Length: 282
Image (cartoon, rainbow, N blue to C red; front, side, top):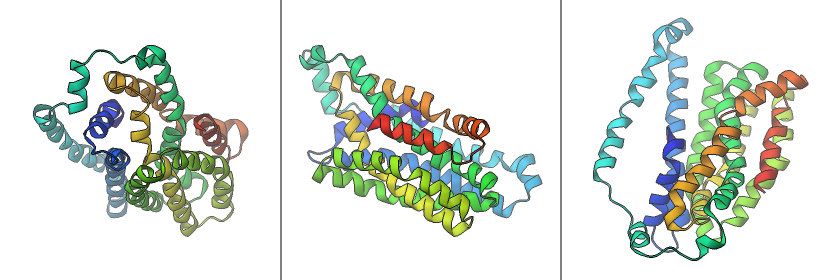
């Protein structure tokens, strides 16, 4: 559900940001995404800890979905009460900007598509697929896998605003490039370490390190992506580029990871997918 509102949410927050604070304010969108993942992961971990497997599979899995429905009331309130940004109102009243004729918005959407590749792949591989991977190949329990994933999410959520604010001071590109380089260099040795030294401590340390690496991108990325586009085209084409990257590279990431393992026979093979995504975004 966050994907469908991604472009509009980022455009809205970044356009309301005070001068020199776009990185920090844009990072709030990513904090909300990770907070949602954190609540889901922590609540799933809690249920697997306090419920028997039979009860969880029979009816307990419905509890998070019922609680998640509450967010619909928040969304309804926002739709009815939140106004447009000043930047959007000025853009509607002003003539089209010449820059839009130089670079067609669809080409900028293609840039956003490549920009978001490592972002979405790292999220889906290390935050969505990792609990399944660690259960199957590292041999830890379901609750331990979810709790270790939760630890990484906590650090990620804390680090995102720090990186967003840092990007306002030193620029977006150094942090974005650092993340891409990290996901070119680190995935293979981290997976090898995890599979050769199977322990919960090792997995937690890896999850924490990955969370920190993702924050290098997730902090400045909302503002950086918004700044690719003019106000008139921002929400539509930013959403288009990000949505296709998420659908093709992110949504299929667990499937592709499983396919790579089945074809190569190596549990480390999903790292090649992460590395390829980092090269594209770099």
